[in-house]
Image (cartoon, rainbow over all chains, first blue to last red; front, side, top):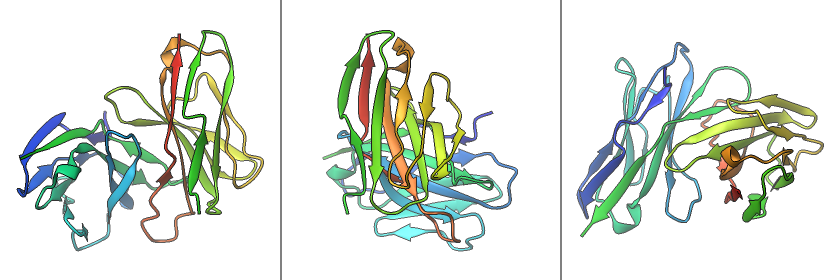
Amino acid sequence: AQKITQTQPGMFVQEKEAVTLDCTYDTSDQSYGLFWYKQPSSGEMIFLIYQGSYDEQNATEGRYSLNFQKARKSANLVISASQLGDSAMYFCAMREAGGGNKLTFGTGTQLKVEL
Amino acid sequence: NAGVTQTPKFRILKIGQSMTLQCTQDMNHNYMYWYRQDPGMGLKLIYYSVGAGITDKGEVPNGYNVSRSTTEDFPLRLELAAPSQTSVYFCASTPPLAGGHNEQFFGPGTRLTVL
């Protein structure tokens, strides 16, 4: 079974609107971390936001927030006030307990921001 | 700090050739990783290392070898290149987990084509 599932291969959003990118995960660990990365067309991987499994508050970083619903095992990324520069591929990733701080990535969502 | 650097940026190999992808980080991070990203897919872990002299397999290690003789360097070796190894290769590093989010820092990637 996939550990990280991103069911939206592609999304469109109008500039200045908010958009939610979905991510569900599967783990039996109590301690884990969830990450979102952005990959623009230039190819680099840019860290956006992190949520720990024990964090009671949803994480926020500027225009990015993470809608963490632990019981549903979902960690959706919300981008507010979309900008043209937000057009990119977005990856959800999970770090489980155990050695190595290893990440498991989802297949990504391609976001296109339109005028 | 240069962060994580990778060389080369691009390479075309013939089937059966070998090559080494170089990765260096100047952040004194103990943990380093190699991922591959196939077109339209997420990243998959090839190998990782938690410190000099220690390496371990990830999800897709077949056809690759690594070594970690220093904290800074983590080269990835392809011995007998196959078309299935056509991919973009990312190196990443992170400090050991210390209760914080400890995101992985990625290099710019190496685009490898095997013909």
